[in-house]
Image 1: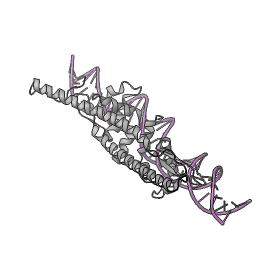
Image 2: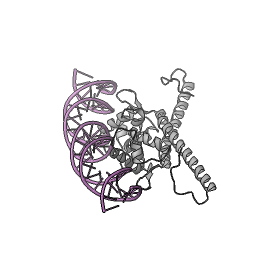
Image 3: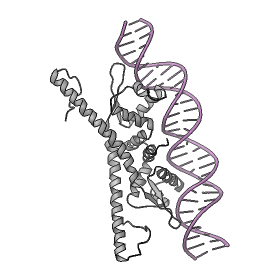
Length: 120
Length: 120
DNA sequence: ACCGTAATCAACCGAATGGTTGACAAATGA
DNA sequence: TCATTTGTCAACCATTCGGTTGATTACGGT
């Protein structure tokens, strides 16, 4: 499970981590601050942050004793690209399929079986 | 881990399942056909398809003995919406931050220290 | 009716996950 | 120097995950 895309998807598969990401879009936060709303130990949150960091979704700096967590939004593009690519391919395929069905309908009206309401 | 978004992200966190989705954008396929390229048992692939189905990414129909797997591309929108929402929020925040830093630079040239607490 | 094909169910296994508690490390402020 | 704050490391536990093999179901084809 070593490729970056898998790590990003896996990181966001957890609701708590997704919520952390959501909160980090508002402002950077320390592990302690991130932990407050959740009913889990600070150690658990520390682990979550580590997962996000290894996925490239966040980075940490040092500032006195605190290590503020910072969202790296660029990594989102990795996912978006993957999704959009196949999303588009799938759409194109449906359009081709609809075209074929439409042609069948023209050639032999009444023989185009199931798959109603396909066109658009 | 019951919410739909988590299931979609988790489903796509596996490279094999991502590859299956990619292939399903080209054409529907049976479990057996899907299994061929991979060096795993048909049962394992059947499980993968089940995961994709429970995530709402694919559906199955019945056609003689075969149960062709069909990609449901609409579910991608769920992810895209989530991603885009926070992506945009993050971008906006950076713009605000840049504005603040720019203002600090104007007011006190040379006093715009390192990334102090910026947000609201 | 019987056999073959397609796929799922069931039980099991090892590795990874998400959580815990307890001990430790690093930087600050008194 | 010493206590405090902040966070990580380590060991452990229960559950989930991806994989296996073996048995079983659901359909045609002949």
